[in-house]
Image (cartoon, rainbow, N blue to C red; front, side):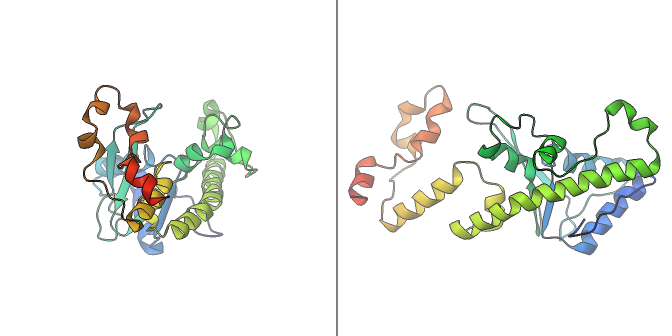
Length: 235
């Protein structure tokens, strides 16, 4: 799907998968957008391709996307999934919605439909129990509605991501895979490097006894790079 265009693939599963792969190669997007794709869609497509004797080789070197799983941290302890492939960047706008503090206490589930309603994208909504009764045309319109909502939400969040990448002077992939604390960390690390404030070891080596037991203090320790030197450097 590109700007102003949308297409739903219908027919046997193998044909649908081949159409998806061919479309990604033909359009040759730099950025692939999904909603919750880091945790479901990409892995599902890889597995369905394998069952149909195909490879979901959509990377620019015909490589299959790799899904890196990182252990959760912080209060939520939410496991993190990162999708990587050669030459393309995957952006999961579900992650952007999760980090969007303007939605706090307003949108709880962060599902595609809930977010689309909040941003007035007018999604087509059908109860799960009625899917089997849909005609092919109705099903096509439902799928296209989801695609348009995904694209509409991506337009909302991509502008912020591009701006953040330019402000921090970072490659876009680092911004797309950031955690909430990364932007401030990049700022502080650069400023400390400019002022020649450099730690003589990592925090776990310098303050070993602080890292016994619960890991909840780790984030707060990131800026304890010899606090006396920091205070002196910043006046």
